[in-house]
Image 1 (cartoon, rainbow, N blue to C red):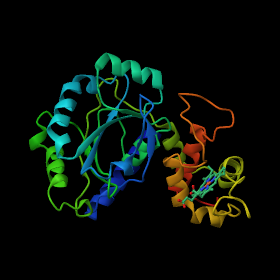
Image 2: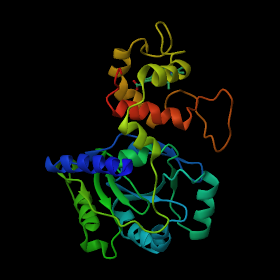
Image 3: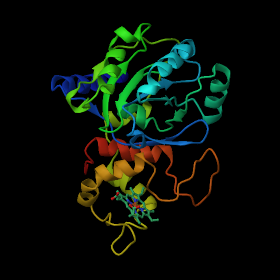
Length: 287
Ligand code: HEC
């Protein structure tokens, strides 16, 4: 039952945005792909659009669509559209993603969304979903299937609209189409489910993370540009804190954990990132 209520919440959010005829927004993020390369959404701003395909190991919908993803890319990449895959499955490690890519020859960068936070931000609930984003304005323009005849379907219409001369995604709408659950494509989001039902507790869950990971620099007289010395201060800086966590800018000196793990590297564990972001998404509550 819990799962249903969480999905209902997401749907309700999407509907209320649609009612105002303005697109859903997404914050900037950085993720590492199956080859160890970093992708930051805002760095694609020279593109008209980025198409992101939700992928999971064993998802039959992805496997059956490999040729059509490539066809879509052939048709659109010369018109300023970039293509990426996003793996947000909790079960898939980087090695498994590489193995799946080797068998099915996706030939797209597959971003490893290990904390599932980018899927949450894009409204992705299952593998096989396709999302179109304007990386300059950070607007989500389409979320739905890759239809057999995409040129005449909403996906093709959205792409045509955003590559058109003078297109402004702020005047567009987020088009949401239902994606049928194909075998092997279901995704579970236990952290989102838990923290949307009840936000992490500031005193016992959030403050200890900040003290351990950030306060060493973000203290009165420290090298960080602001001191994390009160709930109000942290709440006020929350949008920036979310951005630096989602783009791996803070703490400084992070390394790709799949490449090498240094004991003193700045990486924040997945569970801590999930707590921080879901707490901020809930409005950074005091209690
Ligand atoms: C090793 C010292 C250090 C640590 C640890 C550190 N910061 Fe920072 N932080 C800085 C410095 C220096 C700056 C200013 C320069 C910059 O933006 O890179 C900064 C800037 C920021 C900014 C402002 C960014 C902007 O663009 O204005 C935010 C927000 C922030 N840090 C959040 C955090 C969070 C959250 C953590 C813990 C997860 C953290 N920092 C850990 C040193 C640190």
